[in-house]
Length: 132
Image (cartoon, rainbow, N blue to C red; front, side):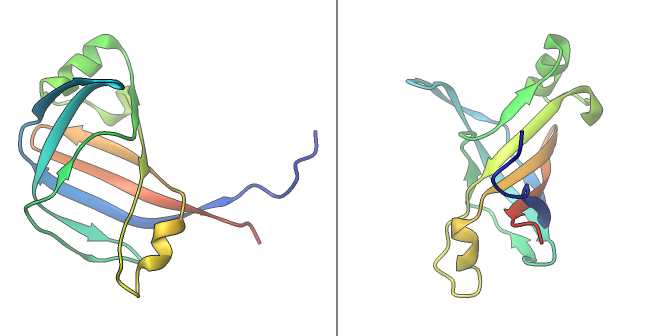
């Protein structure tokens, strides 16, 4: 089957590393269990974005998919050490900014691959762009 256009390519946007507090239970809603993970500090590094992550933000865990054997997922929920190759953890990242330099990111499709350990989260984020 022919496609309508060439497939998009993934371009690295940034790598994020954050120290986080323990997840806070928000409760169940129409889309399932909700948790909020407060961010303590961190860094963002990449060709298009570099900086320090300051306290005050949080990950509300609304977009992403994590899958793996039940015992691996349980260890992740408990904050235990888990080899990232033992589970699948992909994200859909949404960026919202009014800053002139970065507003082009508002309309990008951004996906990521993440790892999680007790007290920290890290992920590589990529945006889709047209193939040459």
